[in-house]
Each structure stands twice: as C-alpha cells, then as structure tokens.
Length: 186
Length: 163
Image 1 (cartoon, each protein chain N blue to C red):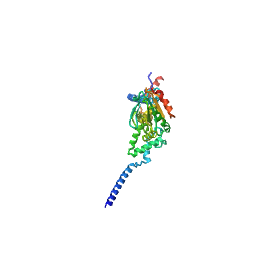
Image 2: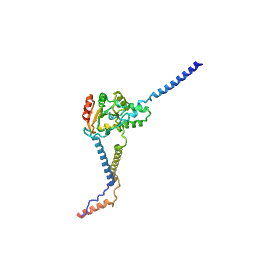
Image 3: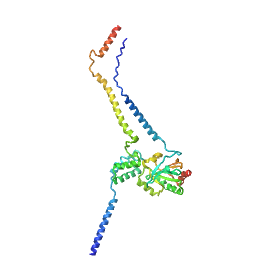
C-alpha cells in the first residue's frame, strides 16, 4: 500500500551553527563575570587572626607609609572623618594614648581619613592637636579592604601582620585603647 | 619749596601704598561661585556615605563639606570635568552618577544594547512567522493540475481500488 501521507515540507530555516556557538560562549562568559564579581563583593571582611594585606597611606604632609615595612610593630589603624561627631569624642583619647607609647618604638598609630575633604580634615587635626601620621583613604581602598560600615572604627594589626583586634565605635577612655594594644606588644 | 617736595613725596607714597593694598585686597576676594554652578556639578556626584542621594540634595554635613569643596575648586578656575575627576581620584568611581565604561562596568554598557538587539531579532522572527500563514492564505487558489490535484487524484484512485 502506498503511503497516503503528503510529504511534509519543512519551511523552518535553522540558524547557522556559529550563531549558537557565539551565543553560548557569550552567555557563559557573562555568567563567569557575574560570578567573579559576586565572589569579590561577597568575600567577607578581614577577621581577627587573618593576615592584613599591605596598606599604603600617604599622609597629609606627603609621607608614604606601608604597613609591610612595619612588621614587628603594633599598628593602630583608626578610621575617622571631620564631619563625624563621635570621632571628635575619641580624638583627644587617641592622641593621649599615642603619646603614652612615644617612649618605645613598638606601636604606631595611623589615622585614616575616610570620605572627607582635605581642608576640614587638616583643621580637625589641628583642632585636636593630633601628632600621629594621618592621611586620606584615597578611593576608599583601605576602608573597602576592612569593609568598614562607618566611622569611627579602629583596627589593631599585630607585630606578625595579622589583625589582632577591632573596635567599631567610640573609645570612651584611654585605658580601653591601651587595653586593645598592650597584649600584642612584644 | 621744601614743603612742596615733602607734599609730593607723601602723595606718591600714599598712592603707591594704596595701589599695593588694592592689589592685595583683589587677591583676597574669592571668586563668587553661585549655588547653581555648585549644584550643576554636585548633581552628577553621589556621596558614598549617604548612598543613592545626589550630592546637590544630600542634607548631611559631609555632603555640605563636599559642596563647599566643589565651590572652592570652581572658584580656583577648575572645569566641571576636572572637579569630577578630582572627586573620583579622592573617593572612587562610586561617587559618579554613571559608572565609567571600564573594568567590570563595561558589562552594563554592552549587555543592554546586546539584549535590545536580541529582543528585536526575536520580535522580527516571531512577526515573520505570524505573517507567513496569512500571506499563504492570500495566495490565489491552486490551479487545476497542480500538486494538490495530483494528491486528490491519487486519493480517488486509492478509494476506487478499495471499492
């Protein structure tokens, strides 16, 4: 018996293979990029005990300080801004604590001026007679490294280059600053 | 005669000192920058502290300080672009209303046109498929002796055989 089915004529034209290949490659590349970015943004802050990557701070008077050169010292990294009222509350205490370590060469305070304007920042330093090195956090790179959520925040880096302690918020007295530093001095 | 000489010396000295004071005063008077000019630049910038609020309408002290800095830079003769570049150098790309097309940001500049092109291509393809059957029906009926007739003829022959 003859086949009565009329022969189906396919009118649908398939896209060339290279279109599929290019589209698939682009999609995969895009997903990889998105994934990479997500990993970067979701990677957590530096936690206590973790190695702190080298930090370079150029101070307002042009001095360049790299924490990689400060191994063996306790580095106190204080984030502040001139527009930050709580920062004013601890400014005198920080300076007092810094002066208490002037005798030895084992502690260095570094002020990181976060999202501030230079004239106001300099006026602030003058007003509180701050003598330890201070510089702007250019492009907020240092703040981003620690994923700071505001100011003031203080990070103590131990002589081994690892994060030793963190204080989010204001120091109420000099003793509490020293209590964060003293256990790490070698 | 002597008093006349003294008079002229005093007069010239006075004129010279006044001219000097005048130039000093002229240097001290800052160039006036109207708020509109400051806000024009500030509108394209965002403060990283108060996210998603343009700098021109941000009410915090930090933003007020930033606006003053813009005013200061404009008074010094900086262009809008120079001020923006300065802010990017100081505070990062996040201060810009539109991210620069570099690094990962290019994805956003490429994906939207590519997605639009893709959408147009899909729409075109769908529309073509929708229009094709209509076009086919609009064609004149097939002439006798065509392919369809041949099929019918075969059908009739088959039916006859079965009878």
